Amino acid sequence: MSILIKNIKELIQVEENPRLKISGKEMANLNTLKDAWLLISGGRIIDFGPSDTIPTPEHYELKIKNYEKINNPLVRLSACPPEIIDATDRLVFPSFCDSHTHLVYAGSREIEYADKIRGLSYEEIAKRGGGILNTAKGLHEASEEELVGQALVRLNEIVMFGTGAVEIKSGYGLSVEDELKMLRVIRRLKELSPLAIVATFLGAHAVPAAYKGRQEEFVDMVINEMIPQVAAEGLADYIDAFCDRGFFTPEETDRILLAGMKYGLRAKIHANELDYSGGIQVGVKYNALSVDHLEYTGDAEIKCLLGSETMPTVLPGAAFFLGLTHAPVRKMIDAGLPVAMASDFNPGSSPSGNMQFILSLACINYHMLPEEAIHAVTINSAYAMGLSDELGSIARGKKANLFITKPIPGYEFMPYAYGSNKVETVILNGEVVRIS
Image (cartoon, rainbow, N blue to C red; front, side):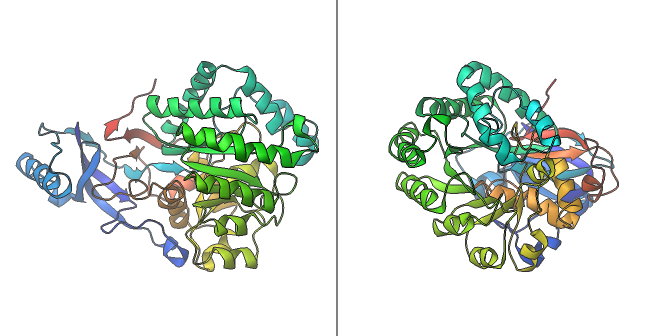
């Protein structure tokens, strides 16, 4: 299938020479092209340019042949006339990339929401058997079919808000059997959904009630039983651990990440949400793809991250929902770091996968410029999933995951109008997505 989008008011996040991530002061610079066209074929972005260079049918065929010759002579793209989409008064964005979610779960936790309003902290709710342990109970009781069905509803919802790639973690199993069940559900979602999905094994999300007072034994089970079986079935792309006060120590996290590395699982870890936990330093030690949350990030943590290949990833939805302190994003960017933003979609601390809202929170609560925030939810969050060579920007040869807005004044309107869905048309893998 081929698509030609014409009369684009502004094409956002355009790259002639694609980058894997955007750091520091460069995050304030956003490349766009006004009054543009975009050509898609075979699921890829073939070409784009100003409207006065829009290809004729003859030039369209030539562009296809040139692309085939340069990129893959063995692939033959469609030579049929493309579907024409008129984007007058509309902007075209690369799809959002949500690099941190827990969206496979059973049921919801609105009762705990009321407890939060009454003043109970996240840690207090967890100690009472709520939080992660509550969701683990629901997941244990649900079948794989039920979990797939519930997750597909959530995936369809985030697609229509503009997300084109999502990371999904396990972590609500807390036993060998249920962690494997959760990861098999994620594998099934990869088959059923048009989204680009990566799976992360998070066996060390919390300590089960049965292991209270025996945390070291649970860590041993994660290392000696869970990781080998996850790797044997090829169920995960990455490994994670919740390195924070009241959860897993830096020493325990170190052991878990080392074991994962031996099985070819690169780290993506929870760190410094509740305190200066040492999680950032452990993540950098193991060349983690990302360290996520980061509410407690000081000079030592920033120094550690500088020069590393680890993406600092902030989760504004969780901080907003739980009333947490805000990660020092401005200080991080000013120091020269890249920053990614993700939803943390989960039933307990961030029950929303709306990346448009995350884009707004980036500007409102973290004082990011719209340009910086757009980088944070596209190219940098794609990097935090290991996908920025394929997604996160408008570049020739990249996968055609993008969305067309409703008529809006400019890209600044995206974070500004936080209460409405600005997405009109979604294109994933080069095809228009239609979800009833």
